[in-house]
Length: 115
Image (cartoon, rainbow, N blue to C red; front, side):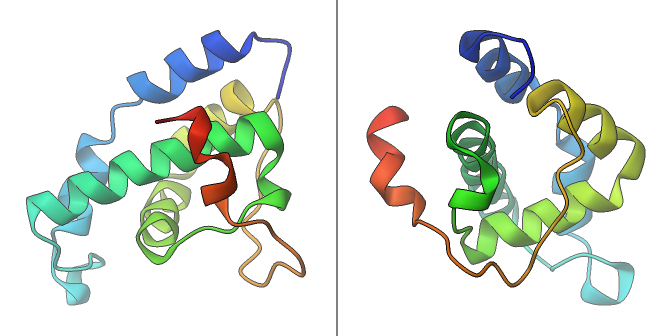
């Protein structure tokens, strides 16, 4: 995490406007989406934001990511300019996606931090 307080990072994460990403996930697969309904897209967004918080606090390389979070992350990555800005603001560096982590800890051990 960069030289921000954890509270500032949390504020940044929860203020992220993923409206366009939600709309994209609701598109058909042929149009680059997942054909999700609004409820699924909103759940994925909320879970992804929780994962971002845990990754900022404990390090992304230490966490597993579940399927919904990962698919939402893919949409965020495709929004390259905003993803770059968001990574710098959250982590202080560009967070690369590693689809094959060698060792990771399930986020549920950290869920006490967000419940």
